Image (cartoon, rainbow, N blue to C red):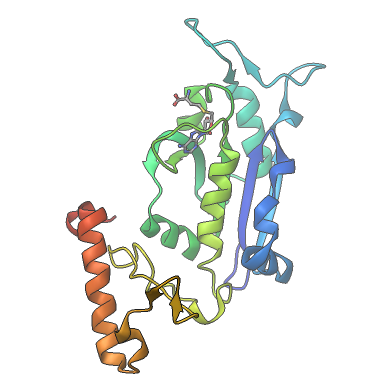
Length: 235
Ligand code: SAH
């Protein structure tokens, strides 16, 4: 059972648990992990491997290159890591999945956490995906060698939205994608650098004018670089 005070919990199934927490052990996410704002568990899939060699993969049915993660091994690992009544979504990092969006990250972050399966080799036996209710999630249209880095990306994006993790900017509402827009440009000291000055308006102290300038810049950048964001209906 989770309660309102339980930490957001990520359970990672992987052949490389040494990759965790990795970069998530540093900076904002690392501090929050140490404070208990979120929790991380890794499960070594190989513990459920077959035979003396704890084999986890086999050749693809129908032939072809590479190896496939066995469904029986993966199912045993999932069953050991998450009870059937565990309310957390079960995700499989996969280039075939629906692409991760800030809206999805926000929804995951508002929930109890996630159980995340990291694929390797050519992927996983298709049967385990439906048998264990795995939702495939992609981090973009490119192929990684394993799901671990994709899982780190997903967890990082979720953890920074947890209450108290980002401090003052906790809502993150200003940021890229939150309003279906890219963020406006940032500047800081020095006021002039290599002949380039900070836009005058930002030194004007006129907060209304600054907000309007940022809004206009945000719209301009989005139109220029990601016009799809202005028309797309984010789920
Ligand atoms: N043969 C597969 C690719 C396997 S890559 C195909 O062509 O679709 C090995 C593992 O890396 C995958 O099982 C998945 O867990 C992970 N992976 C690779 N690219 C990914 C991406 N863009 N998003 C999320 N996970 C990815």
